[in-house]
Image (cartoon, rainbow, N blue to C red; front, top):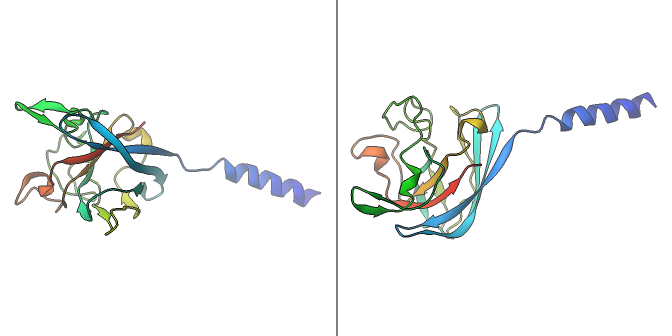
Length: 173
């Protein structure tokens, strides 16, 4: 009887230690509107930082810039007189105001994530880790963004890693 009680107590204690997580629905974005869903990204707190696990489809194959943006909106917005896809998301999440794009392990934007890898079938399923982000609370109410094209994690030769236009967006709740 003691073993059964101990086993139940152990199970009850271990089940209360689940890692905090959330799912973000990702939608295609254009300069006119927020479009159809292309899947979800699960974000989970780990002892090594936040893990972003995509389950996405309908993306161009290759590497894509992947970032957290400052504002929790994916709506288009006029920027410098031009309609911009997900412009209301603002710039990269940079609470220390570093003004630098140095990748997920650098001393720049906290919103810099590793590149999102999309296979030849247009699917992204490979998780990435953001070691400088520790809790979901830090990014709650921000936007998760996928850009067309890669990201060299530098501001040289082009600002913000040379990534292209905003392609898909979701709000982290």
